[in-house]
Image (cartoon, rainbow, N blue to C red; front, side):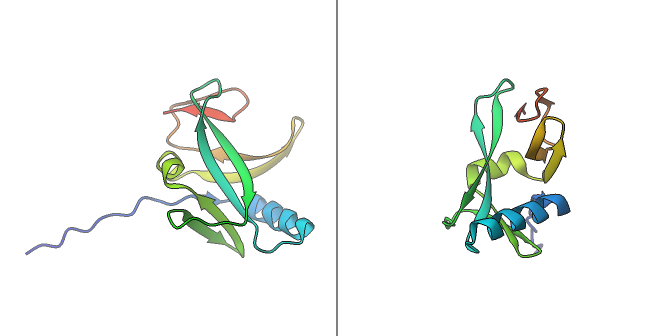
Length: 117
């Protein structure tokens, strides 16, 4: 009798820059219960777009990724689009922002905030 192993998909990754910025923002707010939530919504110029928010509430269905004391939450609907992606924090000429490097995206828009599968 063979046992079928279900391979877990690669989770999301948090870059060191994202961890540092989340930690900085949580400390500024003075609320250690805050977690970064990343989500995918319909819309944007390429079909889907990324969103980020800080959330105290963690739903039972959320995927939780922790790195160096920082917690990232992803809801089940968004998770399927974000498997294997890296959440980064970039500072540049167009301002500072969280970004997603997503290997699942077949195309992205010029601003990098929306994508299609």
